[in-house]
Amino acid sequence: MTHDAYLVGLRLAGRKVVVVGAGSVAQRRLGLLIASGADVHVIAPHATPAVEGMASINLQLRPYQDGDLDGAWYAIACTDDPAVNAAVVDEAERRHIFCVRADSARDGTAVTPASFNHDGIAVGVLTGGQHKRSAALRSAIHEALQRGLITETADVKPEGVALVGGGPGDPDLITVRGRRLLAQADVVVADRLAPAELLADLGPHVEVIDAAKIPYGRAMAQQEINRVLIERAQEGKFVVRLKGGDPFVFARGYEEVLACAEAGVQVTVVPGVTSAISVPAAAGVPVTHRAVNHEFVVVSGHVAPATRNR
Image (cartoon, rainbow, N blue to C red):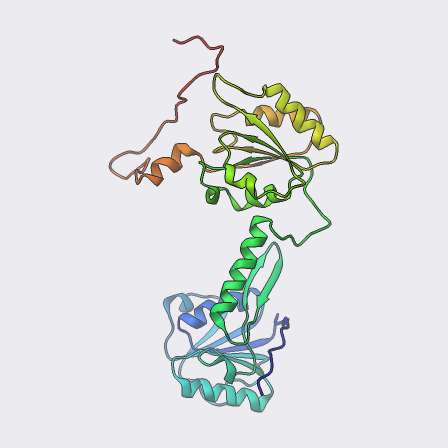
């Protein structure tokens, strides 16, 4: 009978952990062990350059031998030799030490979950040995947290106004922080250049205000935009001002920052990917290239309606 693994967090700070193996698998595991504050001992005849360069481990370049787990609280067997891995698990079993066997998870006494850290929260996923499924679920949860589709602080929400750069048009090119704040908005004031697909993902409770911003055409006056941002924020709503590109590149974002600050409204600016750089990149054209070009200039294609042509 196969039993499900029991998911638990280990406090390893100052406690001995033995890793047998120093190849690519060990290299991936060592970062989190070091971050946990564990006293990490690595035993292997050979090590990758990255493992050799880790200053916070006790590296012994020699074969594993019975007795190496003496005093350990936790062990990982991750060599490319199944016989060695089995021997490590056997010693761990005798000493009552939980041990991960990387090449055959079901033969170990512990399993490493697919995990990630997000804003101080550690999330782990176990799926009964189906590693690809664990990794896929881990990635989906991480992305949902980054996009704000789920939140770890349901009772705490942002305040004031956030000026969010929506990027050059592709909804996948908005920043992670921008996407997260957009998902938490009560009110969204959007330009015509803001990615329309992002607005389609908003909940039915979100008030969407079209600021247009069509040159020489239909547009919401800047003073009116400022007024709406301030009034909605003062009503206790979280307002996202969604702009195309970057809020401060050929945009009037700083005017909105000043207006909010003058009214005592908290304002946050989230940079965006400006089309001045991203469009050439998408076309395969570098704006700078060694020995070819060392600078570039961004120039507006039009001027304010009241400005006389020169």
